[in-house]
Length: 207
Image (cartoon, rainbow, N blue to C red; front, side):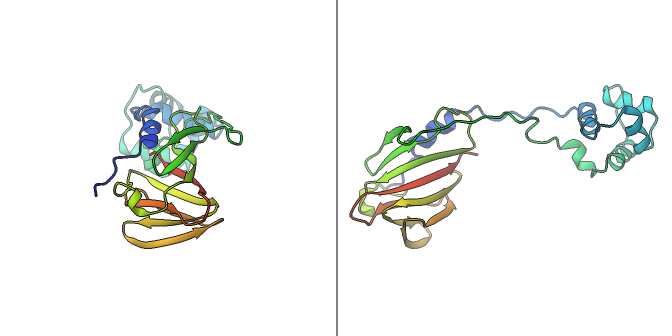
């Protein structure tokens, strides 16, 4: 029995986003952003840091490279730890993205064991992949080995009852309202144990 490759719907979701690109840090711009976030004038920030206004202006405009002592004064004046000078926020701005999927309006993706319905498929570069799944499998033997992939996964039973198999734990029976959160690189499979196909919500991390 061989392990599955990464499930195709997760490969598709990962492929829909570009690989992350880290911009080089511009210290002057970072200092200016921190100052403006406090709504301080150049004069106020220079006074708080114990620096000449012209010195701070040169730092913000990348006209001089500050010494360790100057950076220490800047951090103290801005009320932050020095590492924060070199760690810009991960999100520079709120992008306000949103997508709504109406009931039964998801994108279907059928496998021999599951009937997936991808939710909010119009958004690309997502950090999470939400989808409903109708569990058709009734035994572990219907799978060609473990399903495993990168990231973490959240499972919530919407209707019916399931048995969650995981590589390192005993099987767990779950009914409506039960949930599980697990490392998705650990082998895992889900089967229905109710008379009808169970319906679950899955959320898989993509980062």
